[in-house]
Amino acid sequence: MAAALGVLGALALAALFRALEATPPLVPWLSPVALFVLVAFVGWLARSVHVRVQKRRERVEPSRAVAWLALGKAAALGGAVVAGGYLGYALNFITRLDAAAPRERVVFSAWSVLAGIALTVVGLALERACRVPGDEENPEDAENTPERP
Image (cartoon, rainbow, N blue to C red; front, top):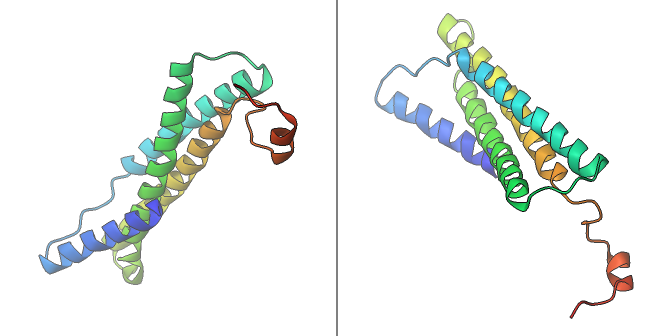
């Protein structure tokens, strides 16, 4: 859903530039680079939290766990919107690859799409790393556990 909103937003933005007969902006090379730096940070954090919570079974302060969970959710949703937005933007120029500017927009948008997908994946990994071992709902376990007062 978030990726679809990104695509629709980018298509609307391109339509606005066409309606105003304005030149659409170039995609700076720093966009995919910054996104990949963010992917590396969230990926490192996901790995660190996974080792801490899942492997070593350390107790984590609840406020810290909530912050990690929120960061994972934001990274996953933000990555999906970014990937969809850059995909929609690139689709506007895919038929004009013979010119340098549209080709550059497509290439840097494609790298940004890949970075957005990677950000979504590591964000989901961070969310999953925040799960407490044994926290999954199993119907068999629910039947065998006594109810709490």
